[in-house]
Length: 432
Ligand SMILES: NC(=O)c1ccc[n+]([C@@H]2O[C@H](COP(=O)([O-])OP(=O)(O)OC[C@H]3O[C@@H](n4cnc5c(N)ncnc54)[C@H](O)[C@@H]3O)[C@@H](O)[C@H]2O)c1
Figure 1 (cartoon, helix red, strand yellow):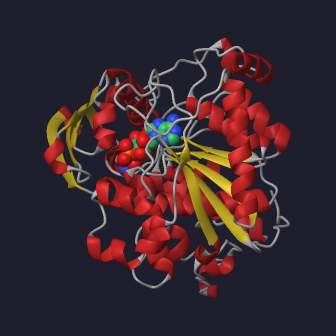
Figure 2 (cartoon, helix red, strand yellow; figure 1 turned 180 degrees about the vertical axis):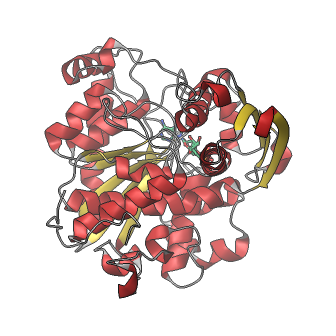
């Protein structure tokens, strides 16, 4: 890819959030509103804070990414979306208990004005939640048409120039890839016939792509990572990205595993456990939803260590991931890792990590960056899977013939090099 023509970021960017009343969504939206009025620093956001080297080292050019790349301004973002519960965003943020009253009161009126639209929901896909603010229609196709209408109305009512959709909804139960997901024709027929393997998230995604709106998947559900949706994204020339925000324990894994591998240390076992007490923790307490998350969390180390190439170091290592719902901690997750490694002549050593993090505080800046970068990609005419955004994702989507890249720093180089290419700057391989 050489320098690309990027349409100007003029007018309003509508951000449609699925699961808008959740902890991540409300923290993302309230934080963005705070940051744009100067009442908080968007810590963790690459688009707002990071710089990028351009040219050779001696040129000493390190502009802020947002100054070098034509990103939309936070001030031009307008928020809307869907949830199973009717509460406005001020009430939902208070329920989530992530940001404190002082912060929320600073943007109270703007938050209270954001009211969720009725959701597409199916209890079979999220067993632990009982929605009260839900659409009904005879078929999944009709539900999809209702979401399309919501999208068009939101765009018109808010005078948006363009839109982006992001799934911050609950993790749906594990659904293996079936024939209905394999072609667009089968998928469309499946919606009309209420096929049981078509999830609510698929319905939102189809509606978004049909309306020329990009789709970001922050959860591990397959959603847009199925051939039918790849076909749809190509047909409408819309960008898609996913899956599953890489925030806490997995982010650490994708830093520590490359360290172990680079130094040719061995691995005997990696045991990861978490406690968390927010609604996400409650949903993940259901075995079906946990299985979706587990699949997403497990693939990372194998991909980085390549046991098939290094059997003497990584053959048969034991990897276990647990998530335990523990209400007292709320959104403040604690993640422990016990890593059994080996060194010279096979002598054993251990690494212990205890990350006392805040789930939604880590996820919010990723939402902001993904929305802004995806909007940039869309304006630059880039469509289909945006694997240069793997940096933000636990199970990055990628072309079927390519392998995923999980190493956080390689992902970061890829992200910045993609931006350099878009600007017509030389990519950096660190030789010069
Ligand atoms: N916080 C993190 O660090 C992190 C990291 C990776 C992935 N995630 C994922 O992000 C998602 C959101 O996490 P959270 O902590 O905000 O959870 P949450 O339970 O607080 O929010 C999810 C929201 O989605 C809504 N919802 C569920 N199904 C819906 C549907 N079909 N349509 C509309 N709304 C729907 C729920 O009512 C709820 O308000 C989860 O899937 C989680 O696994 C979070």
